[in-house]
Picture 1 (cartoon, rainbow, N blue to C red):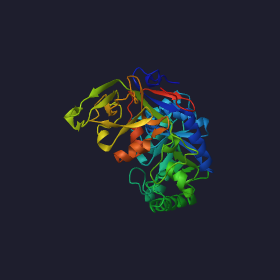
Picture 2 (picture 1 turned 45 degrees about the vertical axis):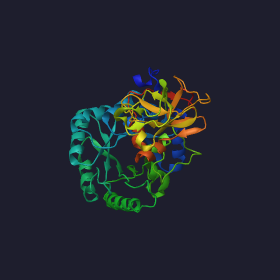
Picture 3 (picture 1 turned 90 degrees about the vertical axis):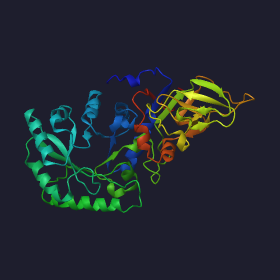
Picture 4 (picture 1 turned 60 degrees about the vertical axis):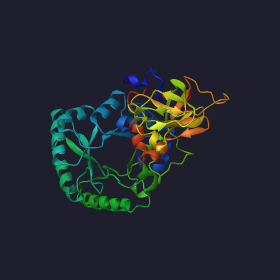
Length: 393
């Protein structure tokens, strides 16, 4: 397995704990839910910030039969760690790197004749025949061959030495809104495109059909074909406000912690952080925490009501978040009943005692989705794998 400096003992007062047991439990729940489809774990973007190699191994231990990535580099990293299951690259890659993709035994997604031709040339050069998955654009308008051109591209695959058809897929744009008619429309478009290809003998029974992401796998039975590509649910994060995970089966795998680096008494009338945008109206205590926007805390976190957990309580972040640090208003403590000292644990995401600050709450306050929050935690924040329940860091 590769050695990654992020996974050594942290040399700073902040880190991300990744609960391997949570990932295993989440994937096991998806495997059970997806039947008769198999589950392929999407571990692109460094496993949505959780660690791609670590997530992939845990997912396979729980029953996932494949993985999916966005980049050749990501697939190579999985192979170097000993991952042997199919690894699907979800979009076409730069043609000049086809040899690397083939050498790593990655499964490319294609939607252009140029990609098929280049892959065929590269595979033939090394005496291989590789499977390709053809993506159909059923309404996402991002990548994929148009339904009207599918048969022509499949014929090109069939005629190209060095490649063979391993799968046909599409991607659902609105699966995270179960009431939206778009999912049924996309499935109808996809099925209408694939049916004549089957009749023409271009899509055999051994070709893998896959459509569903996490939301699709959980909410749309018709989208569970041979394989479902599950990403966000693997990590125990709700796909959307409309598609919430059953917390009896799924739990968050990430806990982001830090420590208090300074506590100071601040007089009423003082201002906090750059721009003096926050004014302290009463005597209070300000705690400094050594994480900032370079670590993934948005600069405007305080402006949207952002908080952290200290001492099992939610505390407001005040003033503009700086590159390496943020400030927290602890309130006054004249009677000494709420002591906070240097070294005390701060939780940015996750549980502390009975209090919780989930990824979904970050997303709600920032007007975004949980995906963006966890993917935005930078690589300079150390990660470590923990057991069933994260301990104090």
